[in-house]
Image 1 (cartoon, rainbow, N blue to C red):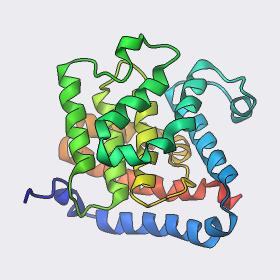
Image 2: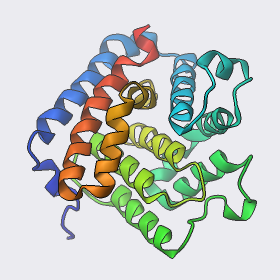
Image 3: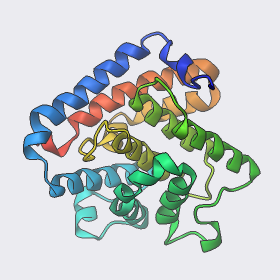
Image 4: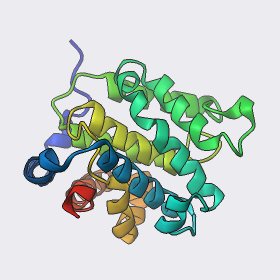
Length: 239
């Protein structure tokens, strides 16, 4: 039996309690509000808000109202296109994660990337990083699902394995993991909006993850737990 590849993360100071608190925040929203108010329209609203927030983080200047009206800029349109098909990939991300990652990029880049580059890694090093990320998604681990989602998010952003839209892909896959692993089965929390609200910390901790060694990974892990709690607060079931 292979060792748990994420076991060391769970032993870092503050991580177990941070993730327990984040999961409690999500469960409280879903239990106390979500189960009574959940409709397909609520899920669609969560996905739309997430698509808008992710697009802004990627450089879009469009407002949420423009996204709703279908008059948003190209980056926002790319993000919305991902959101419309994202939940159909729930069965795939655990079984064939490389296929799911490729599909998310193909959706994001469909309007602007050469078809031959859609869903394909930029180079052999990027292909290796994608295989590593896929192995995390298929490994047996005692780490919380939230931690797995946050780690995969950071890996995809910092590896930038695709020709474009790596941030949009990373944030979409984070949401996808939360659904696939049963944290938020109806996709009601909005992690993308949390990252936008915490933008300075989000971007700083991603830089630390890329450049700061174990300390940077630790800091990102703690940041991600904070963001997941904020994602619960951003859910449309609270409005």
